[in-house]
Image 1: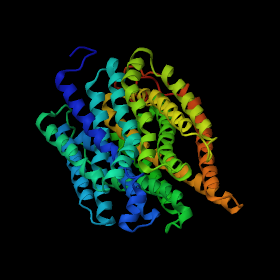
Image 2: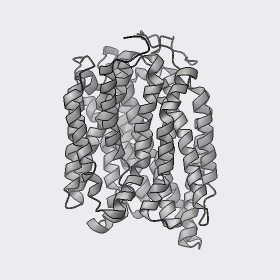
Image 3: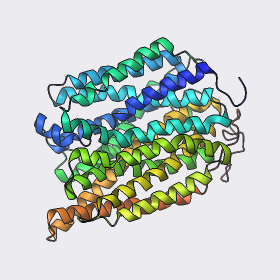
Image 4: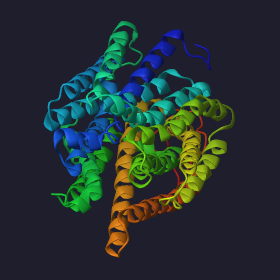
Length: 488
């Protein structure tokens, strides 16, 4: 293979993985707009209904750290089969659900397949695509990672306007099964398995660590409605588990037996990119949750209309993904990440002005600008982060990226919802009417996001295009550069 080309076989494998990943990631945010309908049909409260999203993210957070081991241990085909079979079974269970309990089980099974698919896609791309072409390919991946969650509410809103909520799953099921069958016929093994042993202690610690943190963060958003478990309890368990998990990995990685190898963080480019990516994911998921609430409860839009309001931004992300990738291949990340961060920050500061009389076109424009900014950031951040580690750590780096996405998404939702709830309650307590108080709470949440995103703008200045990764000893970082505070 030429230095800058990908074979037809490898392109087919990547294309199949891209389509499958888009389908599975789409389901992460599809329940948001559907919650009021589910509460009515299933006779459940809002705090109970939120578990349909919380349990999905919780499962993702627990399973993703294990995917680094799975991708190393098994060939591409069996890992793909496991992911799409789990997702298809979970989708069928959800579609057949007579009540909340079975629907929750279906969502958990779905999440297990979703958690495996994204690290598999990233690791395969980093293995097959030469550095000179990675930006363009990662641009396609950014469509999956950013657009699918963004248009989830749009799709569910449209479906709910004409059909029963179970059709959210019936319409996805044939696509998932089709991907599974097509993959079975056409996908080929493109990686070489490594007979690494699994460390059971690490698996248990990761479940407590990442599961506890995601659950604790989700509970902060429910605190105002009388959560049965104080948010600090699972969060404390998660942080203690995380400390134990990190200590265990640092010990095991000396013998190349870590479940999640943390030597990826020796690359300064990887670390800075992950930091900016975390803040960006908080912004994306927080906005996806908050804007439908504002559009429906403050401005009075129907669910379908509120969902459609998010569609132009999602389409902008999708259209810009490949373009951004080509620019990255030519000019590197900074010409994209810095302007993108400035656009997102500007959109956030504008959203702090929302009230009950804000024109709908202004809200739409803000979301489109925010989406364009994030589109300029995601591809360079993914490509710079994964490209800055040596090939032996690609599967671990992909798992770290996936884990960080879930933790940041949960943190973004918890932060935005908590600030909104606290400020809304405070305003109502001081005599404000319900809708002006809710608008004030949403403004406060976006103000918090705007302030936090200033850190992303500053960190974006330090994102670099990685040098070609080479094998390194313990005294060097993963791009072959001596490890030091200055990094690359």
